[in-house]
Length: 161
Image (cartoon, rainbow, N blue to C red):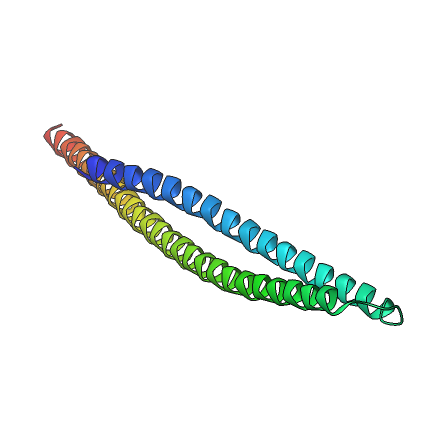
């Protein structure tokens, strides 16, 4: 009975380990996604700075109103893209936090199952030790009784002579 209970816990531990490993992969992917999103943001911001620097450097040359308007529209769209990327990063960070929480819960569950298994194994070991001690005590008691009986029987034989 204890053997089947331990096997059940061992199977639960195997399943919990696989689930934890899958959640760890998902968490690692979420971390990579955030890093990629931040890289994209850095590229957009760098491009915006470079574009502004080029236009500021070209400010001393004659620029038509149409080209200037086109530049401002382009920069506005670029700022919108940066704002959208900020939203994407926020979403990716929420996904990363959710993946992290799920991974922690899986770790706690796995630790709890391992603790149950250790407790059961310790209880089985204690029962075995107690059984062995009881057998040892019974054997010692029987040897003592046999020795005493042999001694008494020997004394009884000595009295007959």
